[in-house]
Image 1 (cartoon, protein in one colour):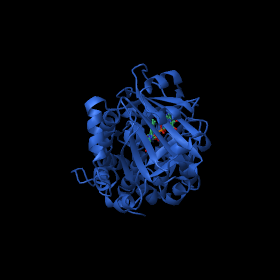
Image 2 (cartoon, rainbow, N blue to C red):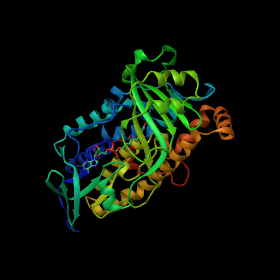
Image 3 (cartoon, protein in one colour):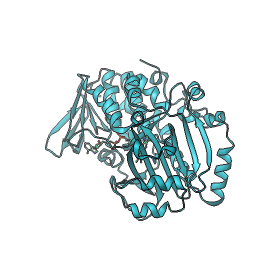
Image 4 (cartoon, rainbow, N blue to C red):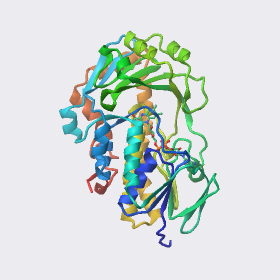
Length: 409
Ligand SMILES: Cc1cc2nc3c(=O)[nH]c(=O)nc-3n(C[C@H](O)[C@H](O)[C@H](O)COP(=O)(O)OP(=O)(O)OC[C@H]3O[C@@H](n4cnc5c(N)ncnc54)[C@H](O)[C@@H]3O)c2cc1C
């Protein structure tokens, strides 16, 4: 295969695409990123960041910038949505940080995207073009060419599809059709703190788990805002993304929940709705000089709050493989997916399991509350080790990163 010093083309300028651009440029690799939207944009909602992604922020030199916008909650608190009783709380202070070396954080999505965007804009090796929706791809022996809807063509040494759940590039590489509709609907909204009743303002990630529903609230932006997420089961929707929801259905689904949940639901007039989708894990998402990253490669339900974290881990891992193979892209992409597929597959599978767990009914709900209620913080930390720990768990698919992926540069 001939060496090609052209840029890496990245399709998609979400969290994953921008993280990949930055990670590759930090390894000296030129990047041309193509985003279909008029401008770089994220949903006006919150996102949770586990300690595993802070390890990546350190590699990317973003820890201070992210921390400047983040809220560091005191606890993860789970309550029963019907009785209102607390089931369990995981303290996120000193013990958690001592265990995982990095914090747990909550951040407003546009702030996280802007941190990545600003970092990319400071690097000469990165070119960012908006209004460029990629519609066609051709792979040759030593380069890749894409055509955009606007009629432009771009040629690069390799291509990364970071184009999300509905990825066009995945259909070229994997060709497995539409993602699977989970039958779970999410409504999201953000409230100014002044509109959240004082007794419900907690410096914590708080959620109520009910029968086929759950409700989440947490502070953002130094406590200026609260992020609200309501999830329920429904087979009424086939597919969809980011449309306005029907509050009547929302209130009907949460009718059996306790007072704090219904009070908070009542505060929101306009909710945005997502029909949740994922895919079963696969182990091969590369073809020669083309690979996938983030939701395009391994879309997952949100129940472990890890989709964006996994995309950023992908970016760091991929850039390291590109460096190690001296830009032999087919070899780098094969090594990258080999390093990633068990970890991301495990998160995809466990996210589904957690979805069932949070929405349990009857005996399963009682058992869940008993089991979680009996856990000590140390036992809770042990259960999180595979996801947040430095070695990514002692389970056999342990150290899926090489040491160069996780140490500071
Ligand atoms: C309700 C909910 C809550 C969540 N909570 C969390 C959480 O707490 N923590 C967490 O880590 N994750 C969370 N996630 C998951 C997280 O949002 C996603 O995994 C993450 O945003 C995926 O990033 P991405 O860059 O891979 O894809 P996307 O963010 O979807 O970005 C893809 C980009 O590609 C562009 N694009 C698409 N097609 C083309 C094309 N043909 N040409 C050019 N550009 C194109 C799009 O415009 C978009 O900008 C949550 C998800 C949901 C739905």
